[in-house]
Structure formats: C-alpha cells, structure tokens
Length: 311
Image (cartoon, rainbow, N blue to C red; front, side):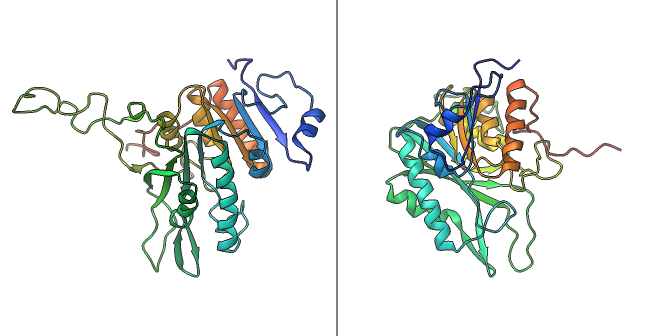
C-alpha cells in the first residue's frame, strides 16, 4: 500500500522561473503526484536540463550524488560533441553538484570510455582533474566488471567501466557492514596462537572490494527497459546503503531509467533527479510507482541473470 506521505514532484522546464512554475501548477491529491518542489518530498523527478534543477537546490543539502552521465558516444539519447565541449559541460554540472553536496557527503560518478577514430579515451581519467580542482578526496575507483558488451576486432573487447567515488571532506559517512558480502570460507578459524579456534574472518561478511562483478542490464535481465544503457539496481544499491542513512537525500542529475530512484526508495532514502528525455521520464515514473507499491522486479546481487532450463 502506497503511503499518502510519499510523493513525487514533477516540474517541467518550460523557460519559466521556479516560482512561476509552482504558481501555475495545482496540487493533485494522489498517492504519488504532488506538483511542487520540496526537499522533504520522498521523490522529486524533474523533466528538463539537470542544470535547471541544480540551480534550485540549496547549498549543502544533498547526502549522496550518484549518476551515470552520457558518455558522448552518440547513442540515441545523447548528442555527440567535441570532447573539449563535453569536458566543459561536465565541469559545469560537477561544480553545481559540489555546491549542493553536504560536507560529509559523496559523489559517485560512473563512466565508461569515449571512442573516436579507434582511440579509447577513458572518461574517468579525463574528468578526474575536475574533482581534484574542487579538492574532493577520491576514496575508491571502483571497477564494475560485467559479462557482456560490444565486440571488438582491433582491440580487446571492453568488459568494465568505472565508478569514481569522492567525498567532499575527510569527515564522511560510510557503513561497510551494510554492504558486506558472504565469506568464501565463513567458518575458517585460527589454527594456532592466542586466537586458536576463533573465527579468522568477520562473521558479518567480507568487504566487497573495489572490483564488482555485476551483470549489466541486457535483453534477458528482469530489470530491462527500453533504455540502452541501464544502471543495475544492485550496483546503485550498494552505494546507497554504504554512503547514506534512512531519510537521507540522493541526487541523480541524469536519471535515465530511474534505477537510482528504485535503489533509494527501496531503502527508505529520499531522491531527487532530472531527465531530459520524455520517454525515459515515463519509464522512470512507472518504475517509481512499482517500487512504492512493492511490485518492482529487481535482480538481487547473488542471483544469476539467466538460468537455462534443465533438460
């Protein structure tokens, strides 16, 4: 049952000021929809340029920013531009994200590679100096390894992307216990010394390390939508659980299919995000509704994507 308190704000960018938009929209008494922008809302989905949303968010108000921006490779939902133009655009977005981030907050920027004339340009290496200029502290460069992707004939096929995790200061929140994974040998014990007979590993599980084997969302994945580069919910969930507390606010400047909203709402976090493509706005809205009413289908971290039928 969707609780009355859970709302989604939808603000369309129509070249109006924020106050004009709010004044033109009336409140819809619905379990999910409320046409106003409010940091206290459970979810706020903005249709339009993310910069228009970021400009409306107060300084030091967001706990976690997690996103996967367009890679500038000319897919159907993005415009391919000169790499310097792309860099300057990303810099503007990242600077605004830094402004709205709390002092104990995090930014997780998930990127792949830009390829031009057969040359591979790693976007994490390209964008790292922007975060460095802001004096942000890199805590991990997580390798997301997945099993499927485009095939190459003149180089090794790419099977990983990266997540750059930065904290704004050295005083940041991190809950490792929330994301521990099963030990390979859970009952392993010390066989000599003062600790002989005691467990030699953490009974809560082990650190998942900085290499994550998480299948990407392809055609036979239960989370699959029409979005061509969909974030697996489990990947986002690991970041949300380890870097935020209940009722904290998660921001996604490039919402896409809404996986960051699903991961946040599943775990009692508030979420705010922008998406410029109407088709993906509709997909996100549907997934948000399914999350709130408990019908969303997600792949749990330890489940296979596909299990062949036994003969």
